Image (tube, rainbow, N blue to C red):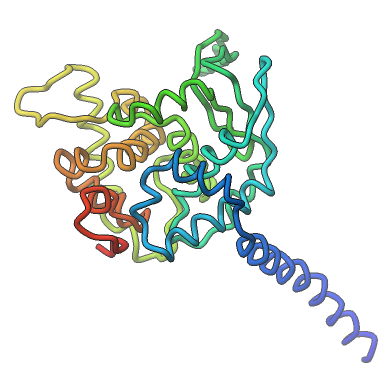
Length: 285
């Protein structure tokens, strides 16, 4: 009998020790401060940071510390990865986690950075037919794998946010999307009661964008600022909507109010209100 209880206790220890160690490690890493240079780079490369309340800023910095510690940045084609690149990418990746329980992209270990738009080998399968081609890309997110980014394109996105593009937000939206095991445009909600209207709203907006992609401006349709690239699939629509939500939030709230409301609920943030200076509080809609 004593041997039986000893085995049970050993099994519990084997299960519990890694669990509690992981929780302690996450808390410890997040409690470490960014150095002054990193804080300055954060302020420069993520303008919305200044509009967050102190608790949100503290949470964001903690996740950035964890991200920088856990992820490896690898430069290609002669690119020398510097601190600005690391902080800018980590800041945008962690912005998407604000206010939500997370382990800071636990399945992501490596980020591959190119100096500019790069060429990737692409394989497509339709039934029994397989075709391959080379395509120019600004970034890509591999399922349970690395994120690839063009630093040159991200720098341009940061310089001209009014265009509504941000390749880092786009690719990390895919990593958020994969948390439930699928690239399908429906991320993992913390509570079963959340996301009740998600499917209906996202489906309507996706099909509206597809109509625009096919017919440009369908009769009677309202103006839109969403990139037509989002019409490719629900997953790409979610990524495009996410980057627009953060980069041109006032336009999205004005032209796509229901879409904005769903994204605000999921991301626990109201960027349109923050950047318009009306309030510094977190969205709770």
